[in-house]
Image 1 (spheres, rainbow, N blue to C red):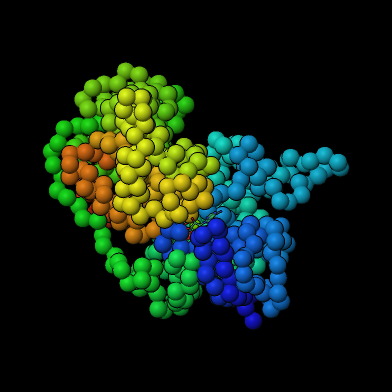
Image 2: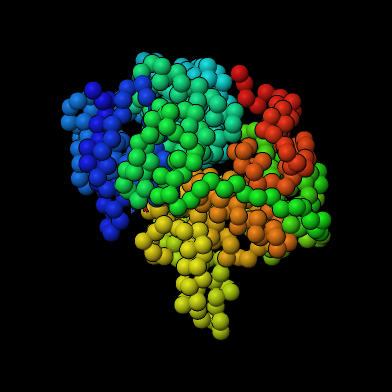
Length: 502
Ligand SMILES: Nc1ncnc2c1ncn2[C@@H]1O[C@H](COP(=O)(O)OP(=O)(O)OP(=O)(O)O)[C@@H](O)[C@H]1O
Ligand SMILES: [Mg+2]
């Protein structure tokens, strides 16, 4: 008997059929991966299983009996724990408070026993070698800290079914490894896991079975022995795409676009960053969590206060870095945290995308609406944003499609320097290729790209040159001539002084 039986589930949002007659089963002790292009319906299915949405049609059976999961609490009560793609933490609470969100606080008499909570939280983190600043407010945490916190929260209560929607999207390899160990352990205890990821190599190594969704329909379920990356991509795209790796161009000796010397930020997250970006190259930036990659990018863009050191853009030193200064020098930042920094979720695609071009599209004080719309439509098509139209609210788009909008919006500013911080986070493998090819094309036109990613394979695939950061310092600068993952990891660990405690 299956742990969970999904029978003929459909879900309709207005005119969109997000799920179309899905039937599948989840067995005890299996890791069942769900894959599919952006907008395929993966997260919608998860939200139905966890009581966030109710199905338009269909029925669930739990351990052989019909079940109605009408709220997240219902799901939890029967033993379903989940990490949603849009992380579900209360940002004004501390890490510790979030850990206990759905659990009774330990008490001492009538009072909350903070001491016991702290101890339990610290023990949990230590047991798994996690480095989570539990005392910090969630709004001050990095995306990877937030994910680790959600994972820790899942570890606190017993599950029969654990659902992870894009858990590794902002995690480094080391952190992902901790997650995989946890998955292995719970699987051995008979817990079922539904695992969603666009990182197909993860899917292949973790899963017992994989189900492919496309356009809301279930295309195929494959057993472990049948799964290969080529086959998955084949089913995900209906045979339309094959896996192509981005091709590196020969590095030209262009002019320096960006020069950062001995950069130190006022908050101490960056202590000594040095980098140069030349015309015509993609510079990869890699480092373990807490290395200061994002913070360095923010400092270059003028979002983080600089204490000492210099930033030079197009051979001109920037005395007072600020976003407006950066923008005027042709810099665009594609931030890591799209929810807070890049998009206004309640606004439409049109409203979000028109922000950077309002000035350009206004002539004689009149906004050229037609021109604006056609430009925006063109960029949406380039990245194949799946939406009902330019008036759809961004918050209603699938995670990967939101990221595509961030990218499309950035392009409208016609930049010469791209700073991309985890730009392919949560996008499907086809879009990832498109983004890589697009950036390749851009550097071919003497632009430059700084590319931050936690995915080492991606960094090696796309970069002409790679710098490695550790604890706020640049510790290596390497030409990417046949570099291997181990070459980079070895450097990271050599310079790391206890960032992850184990
Ligand atoms: N609340 C909503 N309102 C309207 N449409 C929605 C809503 N939630 C999802 N959709 C639509 O349903 C479809 C499936 O979205 P879903 O988020 O399930 O995709 P996904 O497979 O998780 O994609 P991704 O890989 O990008 O995360 C998309 O077309 C999306 O725009
Ligand atoms: Mg999703």
